Structures are given as structure tokens and as C-alpha cells.
Image (cartoon, rainbow, N blue to C red; front, side):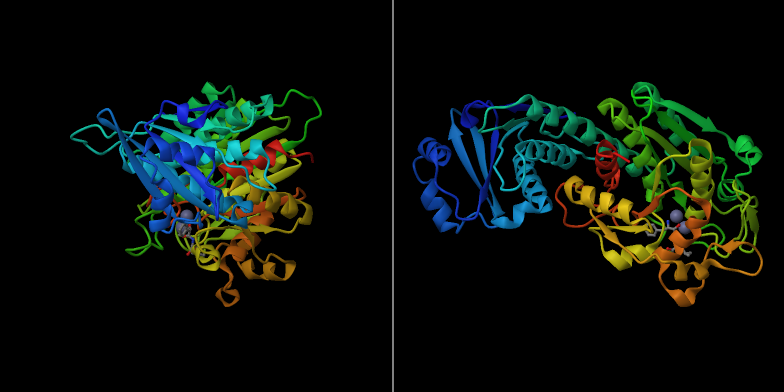
Length: 500
Ligand code: BES
Ligand code: ZN
Ligand code: ZN
């Protein structure tokens, strides 16, 4: 794993094989650049000129300098002008620089932290460290390398300002956050022949133990006994039965508020009898991204000693086809006593979440409930790959979440969710149906309308991470075609800043 340290000594005096400099448009040719120029034969300014490098966003230029038989790489990355005030542009510049260093097969990199107007130094440290760690994540466990690849193992963030205690704390927090994100990605990237409801529940127990988070796993018999007809129906078609993971973190203060986080944990979604066609099933190992995110979020929260109680609930099931699986037309009864008609076995996420949401509300009376779920393909088409869908009828919660969406890097786009749409899930054979009236089209809203029947009185937000959980394109801090850990940074920021 990569080690990230902070320094406020001279940038160029760092022992590193590569140096990343993040430069604003029309940057000054300052003392650091002059020094690089002097060790490289005084042609840096001419090099910038010839390559038209002026620090525009997206520009990148590498200067290799030879010294005593080895090369040092000076990597210049454009930050643009005011764009960096939106941290997302900054993150991408950082990741671009790190990827370039990686391309030169070096094991160490020093990054000079820029100053950005309107953004605190601490925030820059935190965002830079999280982003670098995310960029260096790689799911390559199953590749038989002829030669072990050279990886960046040492990162030094160099501050031009003297470091404060708050700066150092920001780095410590960043390491915890990035670790939670990358562990989530690993669980998503591991395929369904490794991760099933049983093995995923074992991971939750392992992580819970490591971070002193009380973890309880309910097996299929207990799920049936508790009346969780949704979770059982989705999970019963698989050789690996369903599980319910419940994790509890208690804050030190007695009167601390409680946040419940609930994550969809379908370890593989074949669609069930409404089987998915070719082209729609291949990535469905990612359908447990919500569960992986809440499991790792609560472990991070415990390490950060948040002043908020947190409950994580993850309903785990494998949606398969077999003689024991549920059928279209089945009628299920959930934990809260409500019934639903299974119009489509591929709308399974809402069936398992229904029981989990009702369970969280009834047993913990939290102040707020947030669920993360790769719930609908419709959401992917609605918002694209750079936003998760936010559906809530609670304005205060919407504001709180939209704020941390910007700072954390897990962007949200709010989608319509009003009373009138709730007619969508009506049916004449049960309280509700899981596929909804197609005339309404709004698939992501349809999912939220179904789920709303399982949260009675608690402020609640549903976050559809189907767009962002997996295979997000053109984002250099993610691995192509892999899990992203969407929602982890968001939930951690939300909980750390939650005041009720
Ligand atoms: N897991 C899928 C949603 C999904 C699609 C996640 C693409 C990630 C990427 C979910 O269980 C599903 O199949 N939803 C159906 C619902 C429909 C049958 C009402 C969908 O979106 O088509
Ligand atoms: Zn499905
Ligand atoms: Zn699904």
C-alpha cells in the first residue's frame, strides 16, 4: 500500500524519482521552476514555450532529467484558472499527474501542493491525498505478471506553508477515507465467484472486528423468522442464501444523533426469471456496491471517532435463476407487514432494501436514513456517469447532502420525487408492485416511490448509485472498468458534519 507523508521542507530537496507541479494558467516562472531549469540545462522556459504549456486545464508536460545514470521526471500539470475552485477539476489534474508518474515506472513521487483561492489548505491536503490514493488503486490480483510491476509506494505532499496540526489531521483523515474507498472498490471488483452473500457477510465481520464496530449477521432462517419476505424471496434462488448485515458504531457522547446508512447488496444480479439479456448482465457483480460502501463507511467513521452514532444495514442476496427462485407474480410480505406484487424479478434491489429500511427505522429510530443502491438503469440514462441520483422529499436533508456532494467528490443530481408519482407503484393485487406503471417512465423515481413505503416517519434520502458505482469513463482517479467506491466519501463527509 502507498504511504503518503506531509512535508514543509524544500520541494526539490525531496528524495523522489518524480515531481509533480500543478500550475495555474499563466503561472509565474518562480524560484522552483528556475531551480528545475538550472538542474536541467536552463531550457525549461523554452520547453514550455515550444510545447505551448501555459497551465491550461488538461495540459501535461514531462521533463526527464538525467543525473548519474538515472532519470528524475518533472511533471507539469495545468490547473486552468478559476476551474479549480470546483474541486472536481483539481482532483482530475492531480490524478493526471500521478498517472503520468506511474507511466514512468517510478516508485516515488513528490507533489507540490498549490494554493487555490476559496479552498482551505487543509481541504487541499485532504483532497489531494484521497485522490492520489484512489488513483493508485489497482485491481490486478488475478494477473500473472512476468515481472512485478513498479508501483508508486511513497508519496510526499509538500506544502509551501508551514504545516499546522490541522493540516496533519487532514492527512490522517484522508488516509482513512481513501482506505475505505479502496476497500469498497476491491469488494466490488472481486467477481461473484468470490463474493456472495456469505463471503461478503464474512468480510463485514472481519472489517467490523478490525475497527471495533459491532457486527451482527442474520442467516436465512433468521431472515424468514423476522418476516423479511423481500430479502428472502430475492436470495432463495441461490445456493448461497441471503444474509442481513447490521453494524453499529456508538459515539462517545450519550445524546449524539443517529444516522442509519443502508446499502443494496446484490452480489450478482442475473435478473432472476426476468433474466437480463447479453450486454446487461456482465457487470452485475457491481450490484453490491451500496452494501460495500456502507460497510466500509461505518469502519471509517469508527476510526475517525465521529460524534454521531451510525448504523449500517446491508441486505445481501444473489439474484439467480433456479427451481427455488421467486417468480413474476409472486406476492411478498415484508418486515413492516406491507405486501408487494413481484411484477419483475429484476427489480430486486427495492425488495431487499424494503426489509432493510423498515428494520433500520423500527429497531434504531435514527434521526436520518440514507440508502445507497445501484437501483435502476433509468438513473444511468438520466444523469450520466458523473452523478448519482438523489431522491428525497426532505428539503433540509437534500441541502445537507448537496453540500457534501461538492466537497467530498461524490456528486449528486436531484431527481423528481413528489407525492403524485407515488401512484406509479399501485396495483390491485397487493399494497404495491415492484415494477411500477411504465407510462410514468421515470424509473429512478419509481424505485424511490416503492422504497418510500418502508420509511414511515424518518427524514430519508435514496441515492441511486447505478450511474457512478462502476466503470465510470474518463476519470483518471478511477481504474477503467472497475468499481469506484461511490458514496463512501459522501457518507463520511455527511456523517462527520452531521449536527441533526
Ligand atoms: N441492478 C439493476 C440496475 C442497474 C442497471 C445497476 C445498470 C447498474 C447498472 C437493477 O436491479 C435492475 O435490474 N433494475 C431494473 C428495474 C426494472 C425492472 C423496473 C432496471 O433498471 O431495468
Ligand atoms: Zn435487477
Ligand atoms: Zn440489481
